[in-house]
Picture (cartoon, rainbow, N blue to C red):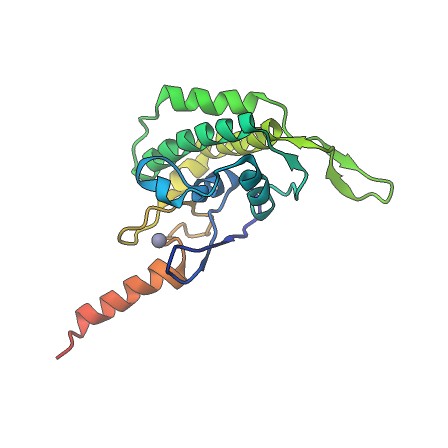
Length: 198
Ligand SMILES: [Zn+2]
């Protein structure tokens, strides 16, 4: 799990909003997916993935070199994580063994190697391979799914919103992908219901 931050998301024809997925492995899910999620696909080429990684909380900057094979492995891991996280958010613990195996396979690769420079600056041994990046994502997922954070995986409560996040708030009462978006829509609707027009 990493420090709280977030990323700018934009849906076609809508205002962009800030979304904090709470942890690296769930952050990857905003890049698209299979089935219904395919219309949000952002990772069409290895270059798309390389360009996205600096916006994630991986902390690897633009050091990652992504091959076509890395992109395919990323889409596989992402699909597995999507199913695992949706299962967790629904309250079920019936995880697919095949998806857990996909996760373990990615986690088995060595993660990026930290290095310290002559001025004691911290960085990563470069280039970082796509497999090392995926290892970091998968190891984050092992930590989340294998610990108490599992109960904090949520799906946004907004209508027609399926964004998944880790609720890192102290009370654990986060309901929305973003207050600016689904949170406010809900507030407006509740207000309208209480004070019907006319
Ligand atoms: Zn939402």
